[in-house]
Image 1 (cartoon, rainbow, N blue to C red):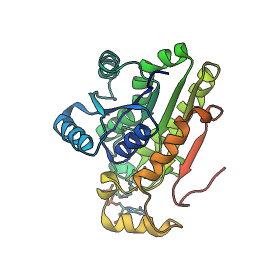
Image 2 (spheres, rainbow, N blue to C red; image 1 turned 90 degrees about the vertical axis):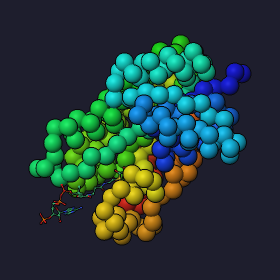
Image 3 (spheres, protein in one colour; image 1 turned 180 degrees about the vertical axis):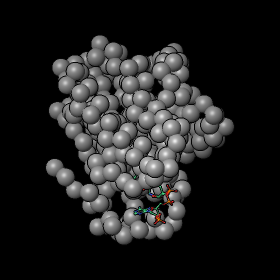
Length: 248
Ligand code: CAA
């Protein structure tokens, strides 16, 4: 069987990088998507990964734009091949209490974290259904499940991600394509480092495990969902949050 190809959007970020490493270890050919303005960072990341034995491809694309996402996927198809696995991992925060939130802060988060699911998935879903195999994993958040003070934009987008998962999962279920959501809690990355220290400590104090999660703990779960044997799992949400929020 030809090597399967995985695109990880936000692939050079904290969780994205760990997912790239995990999927490569599982035998996928991995392409890390990056935001065009981060070209230098992406090239440096690629070089560092190569030095560690990970021959990842990188591809530039703004996931908040349909046209840019289309160009990114065409570029990957031409250089690497058709995409069998899509991990929608690109995401941003613009935290502000709702009464102070500006339209730009709302729109940026909805565009990057939610519109992106349409913009990127739309480019790859036909190929997956035609070939009869595909895995789509949307990285959401505990804050899409329980809300978070200062994150009306982010919580709305992340809750929306799971609605998207459940609907698309039904549409492609008979075509060998699964669609699932992974909802991490607070993970030790640049995104959580950017929070005020006292806010971060206050949140960790609410986590039954009394610690943040590690990116490779998220990556492990994503890897499982991309496995051939995960074929019967679809439309599901998997949470990993140290016990911060429990539901069934
Ligand atoms: N709970 C209760 N009250 C809070 C609060 C909280 N978490 N945060 C702030 N407040 C209070 C403040 O004390 C202040 O009270 P007063 O008016 O009485 O002084 C009031 O709310 C307004 O606070 P600010 O003026 O500081 O509000 P702000 O809009 O400038 O910013 C905030 C607030 C920085 C967004 C802050 O609420 C915050 O950091 N919240 C946490 C956001 C968060 O968890 N982000 C996660 C980032 S990582 C991520 O998103 C990954 C993932 O998936 C988990």
